Image 1 (spheres, rainbow, N blue to C red):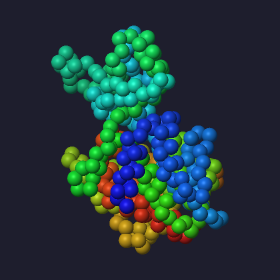
Image 2 (spheres, rainbow, N blue to C red):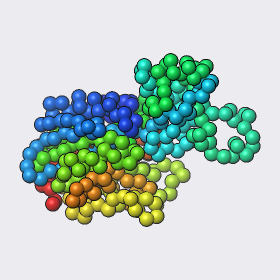
Image 3 (tube, rainbow, N blue to C red):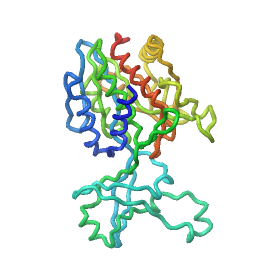
Image 4 (cartoon, rainbow, N blue to C red):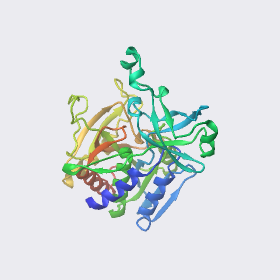
Length: 352
């Protein structure tokens, strides 16, 4: 099981899928699911909806395909490219990163540069370096050369990172948020013998506003909805336990609530029956799990729950260190347990 999960996660992590341009990721997912589901289709926005099983009731489990990324904003006369952000990115992570610009003539590689620290004034050195003071260098000497490469305003930009296997059963890579969720969902729906109609949905543009889940929740009209995503593991230096109590290696995380800091508005308060059903399924199958109240983020379930007349929803996540960086870390054992829990939910009677 671990080898299969590693293979899928590696392919998905190294693939490029910014919000609005998830095609490469979608093709991998479709190839993995072909022959394992009863039906698979893409909607007009690019969401993948795979169906397996039958019955009047249905379970929708959603994982998003997109990753945090950039977009070309301006090309200056000397051939340097300015960019805007797609999704929540801490600016300091960007400088010196290798990038791929997805232009009309193919992929162009570049690096993110900034003013050298040697020539910064003392007050500049003390300030956080913001993205508007950075630029992308593709080796061009003029705006015309950049355009000849097939690069124009509005082209997508992704960070280029390789998948790494670390010690202790841990792996590192980009876009585990939420290619890890996609991996677990792919594996689960392949193996499951569902008790109801199961919709494995791989959504677009989660990082910029839960857009794919908004339309697929409406189209599928499930009895119960689950989002599968990553969550913040705080088991590393400079993190207090109360800030992020979830730990890598201790099992998937069942969300008790999520949303904005201080108020938890704009997030999800899971349906109590759904949350208890997930807990009982984990206990029945002897899958260790963690519970979390997440301040500062939410998932596709927030959009799904508000579709049509409303959908009872819950969230399950894989604990991940350094979320929303370009080198996230998770435990393969946690990913296996997450896949097993998702499979278990597909094979249990729905709670509603």
